[in-house]
Image (cartoon, rainbow, N blue to C red):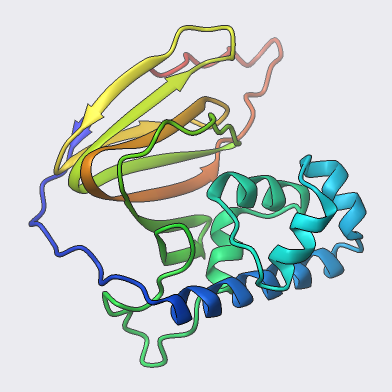
Length: 216
């Protein structure tokens, strides 16, 4: 683990019901557009994700909110990422500057940068809740805590022991691709940045290529 140190910033304003509804509609439209581009039906996406056809239909119409876990499964089925779908549902700020009350999407997330040279940055504001399921994806990610305290848990595989670290203001940790992981806010609201990095290339094996060491 290594540390960055920056000044504190205020937590984003409380969202209104109308704002939440509009965001749900934009996200649903982004999901439907991506699904149609891929030539998939709702039934096929339901089979790929394990989510119900009815729930997916409501999400696409903006009638139901998608948790980050559900959005992750949908993105995987559609051959994209959560960050890309969230960015598609985020209005353009217009003047190129993203103000602190702009860009807020779903589930306490705010897209700051989307797929620029393979890098995405999403800001999360979370309250303390029971731990969610573990995530696993090819891309590595850097977690940086701006305000509050965050529990980060990782494991190499489902049958492996879980390693954990508590991150406080200014702390960060790099999680390599292909590792099970989850983040859980501790205490009051926690605000942190999730920086998704390009997927790490697969090592080349052969007589002239030694297997590189696994970083710890």
